[in-house]
Figure (cartoon, rainbow over the protein chains, first blue to last red):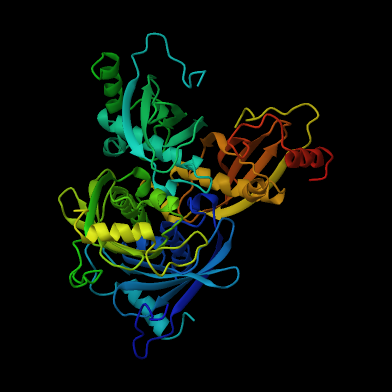
Amino acid sequence: MITPYFNTEEGAPAPLRAAVSGRVRFEEVDPLGIVWHGRYASYFEDARVALTDRYGIGYLDLYEKEVVAPVRKLHADYFRSLRFGETFTVEAVLHWTEAPCLNMEFTIQNEAREVTTTGYTVQLMLDADRNLLLLPPPFYRAFLDRWRRGGLA
Amino acid sequence: MITPYFNTEEGAPAPLRAAVSGRVRFEEVDPLGIVWHGRYASYFEDARVALTDRYGIGYLDLYEKEVVAPVRKLHADYFRSLRFGETFTVEAVLHWTEAPCLNMEFTIQNEAREVTTTGYTVQLMLDADRNLLLLPPPFYRAFLDRWRRGGLA
Amino acid sequence: MITPYFNTEEGAPAPLRAAVSGRVRFEEVDPLGIVWHGRYASYFEDARVALTDRYGIGYLDLYEKEVVAPVRKLHADYFRSLRFGETFTVEAVLHWTEAPCLNMEFTIQNEAREVTTTGYTVQLMLDADRNLLLLPPPFYRAFLDRWRRGGLA
Amino acid sequence: MITPYFNTEEGAPAPLRAAVSGRVRFEEVDPLGIVWHGRYASYFEDARVALTDRYGIGYLDLYEKEVVAPVRKLHADYFRSLRFGETFTVEAVLHWTEAPCLNMEFTIQNEAREVTTTGYTVQLMLDADRNLLLLPPPFYRAFLDRWRRGGLA
């Protein structure tokens, strides 16, 4: 990845990070012997869950607040293949924005620490009636405040 | 299949049937070049949906009646492989029982009309509080009555 | 989609198109009641297979020529949700390029003909030793010639 | 499970065991809020891979010996549901048989150590031409000998 997926706002707090490791499952490998490209959304999801759980903004946390955050944009760049049985790590990086949306970037590395895949997702927040939120809801406002003050490092 | 999966009760009305056709997707094929055995639950599901929709006892019909019917038993026997791009048919056969459960049998045939896979599922009915129903709920009782009187043929 | 995913080269022949229809499967729907975003790669794949099969450049055609064309870039934009049981169409559009790569765009429409999802993939061609092809191999050169001369319309 | 899935032969060596732990992924959960029944084949597979890798009879080991062992029978019994985010363990137990087949039993337990799901698979061995092997191939014969002599405990 030469160009960053997201622009960094001036004075933005450092992004939040979480990583998980996984191992390629038999049924994730296609007839060409490599992980089918569509499965990586699932690997990204594993890291998304790890990151959002760590910071209290996971699916179930949002559910309690009557907010959902569906994915509105998914992108993946494939540089190297993963094969059956390989172990890998997926890192998710949440970039700062004051908008009620989650801009998350992903990097997958193989055992040799080579980058195999990068990508990003954008999630928007909706209320219980599935209306787009134009401002962060209170719990997310509080999360952003803690983040900006460095309380999540 | 030599032995039938379900015993036929004396005097039971003829089973109900529905079939769908499909085509093997690229990502359903494993590194051995054949459909991964775990995907067949999805093929069975396609036929289950076709059958239950036809007779008004689909997921959404049950949902309206505040009943769910989770699968409690799944079985599959694999005789021949399916490969990428092959078309096939899946037939679902619902066997008669007065109990609040769905006993369904499946047969998959390839283009040459050879049986590739057979199997069955058993679904039990639960109410909105996820308690097991010991007797068929009214709407299902009505469905069974129509079936027995030949009104579903 | 406001900006087109691919630039049209001056004098390029019209893109090639193919469409398939599908129906949302039970297991494709997530706990929020909508198709999980990662499944759309599979819907795109269905249309990719239809298009490449129609024009003789499918997985098996390439396999015979000892060429593979893995996906190197995947992108999806989600505008509306699809729900359990909905039928939809996926159209694939192959854009002209003389490079040994497949630039394909996808549009999914629901029953009301509303665009629910758009996206694209870029596939590069590799030879049997998994080396990147810098020029189109002969069979693909012939395909491009037919396309340019209007023989594929 | 009241009846055992496999009969124990008189004088058979103790079964071989391996367990893995997992966590329910978001996309594995269906609209009813529970893991879709068809996903358990994948959980079983994780334990199968762990067990066969541990004892040197995994997919890649067999591949080197030009043997494949496709699943010919799959069975699952569902007792309790798993929900999003739950962690669980899957234990695979390989039962003794001198035939060239793998009789494997699976037990899934939730965090409370309650059995949620049990099941089994039967795999038959085929040679490189996909002919059924009637006798264990030499490498598997050697594996059985070590097992019987207690060298795998």
